[in-house]
Amino acid sequence: METTGYRSIVVPLDSPFLPMADDRGRVYEHRLVVAESLGRCLTADEEVHHVNADKHDNRLSNLRLFSKGVLSREHHAEVLRLRAEVRRLRAELREAFSSRPL
Image (cartoon, rainbow, N blue to C red):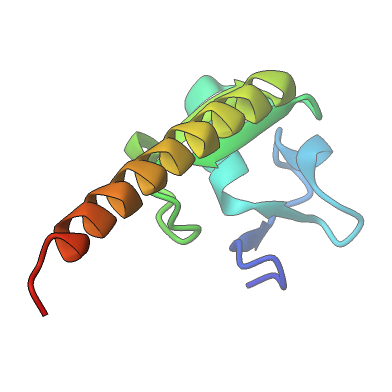
C-alpha cells in the first residue's frame, strides 16, 4: 500500500507493462488492471478513476479511463452538482425547522 492509499504491484522485468512502472518497479494496481484490459500501457495523460471512490476496489467494472483534462472537468461538474444539492438540502432543512413550533 502506498501513502496515497492506492495499492501498487511490483511488475516483473519481462512484463509488457514495465514502462508504466516507477523507479522501484511498481505500478498502481488500478492502472495495471485497465492497461491489461486494453492490452497496452497507459500514457501519462491517461488517468483511471474509481467510480465508487473506493481506492481498494480495483474491479474493472469500477474503473473508468479518462484523459487528464476530461477527468478534471468531470470532477468539477460533480463538485458543482453536489454543492447545489447541499444548498437545496440546507434550504429544505431551514424551512422545515423554521416552521416548527417550539
